[in-house]
Length: 247
Ligand SMILES: [Zn+2]
Ligand SMILES: [Zn+2]
Image (cartoon, rainbow, N blue to C red; front, side):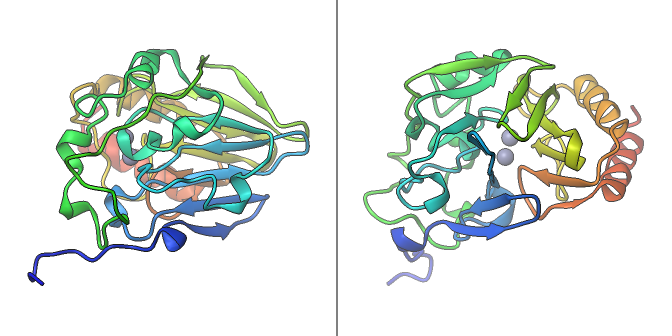
């Protein structure tokens, strides 16, 4: 075996789940390196559940994760980069902001960034066969529903408001649960290197989105990548970003 050959992960262990506070479960793919590893968020509700983002899609998601099998689930894409929408097609309907609906409807490897990032560098272990980098494709969800700023996703006993947060990408959204002061932020803010220079990024939009999030009385942020963090730390991250980028 070549020194450079990565091993293959087992399908049964591809996903990991961690139960957090407020009936929120983090689902992720530990064989993917942290910078590329998407956080998949599952929120349990009284009438229905919510799942935000779907990971790489190299291993079937719903049949692998008990929380996602057989429930009434509202599926939401925070945005349409490949690491977030790979398994979106496993849900009957996927919600996305209107500004990225065209990408979700035709999720080619260029616009979803798969061309730029899918290679050995993003893995500690590769997905099980038949996965290959060159064969990686994202399947279009059977149905796409549009979200706009101010829409409310109602799980019965809990409500999440859609906040349009363009900048990283034009149709990025965060979800705000006021009752628990929880922000599910996608890739606009997380506790790691933020990306604002993609083909459809916009620095002015990025700054405005961060300023808007800074006004929220946030207690906990669950980002698109890396571990969750406090509202206070969120303020620090935003202030540092605005200073660094002189916006
Ligand atoms: Zn992204
Ligand atoms: Zn991402």
